[in-house]
Length: 87
Image (cartoon, rainbow, N blue to C red; front, side, top):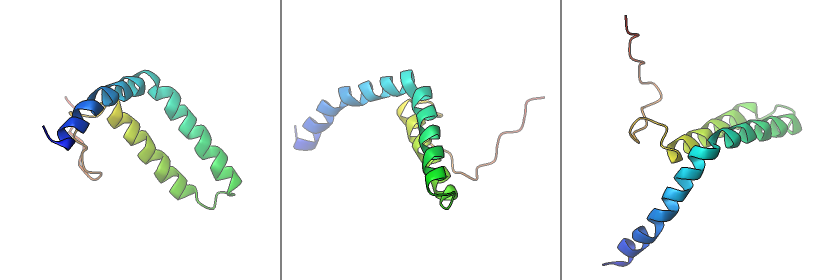
């Protein structure tokens, strides 16, 4: 067994733990990200609002991926069309 295999084997329990915590506390983390973004946006006098929103969105996306909330682990492209509504 190689060094990378040993490392992967040791990190699997940690990844599972992080995933469980992300599922349990994802809403709290999301709320905290929004609060922090608002404070930073106010402190910078809204000069970097677009960058703050982008960063907040990416952080929330990362939380969703950790919590396995997305579809099967695959992230759809940002311009992917939505499926038509069921009639």
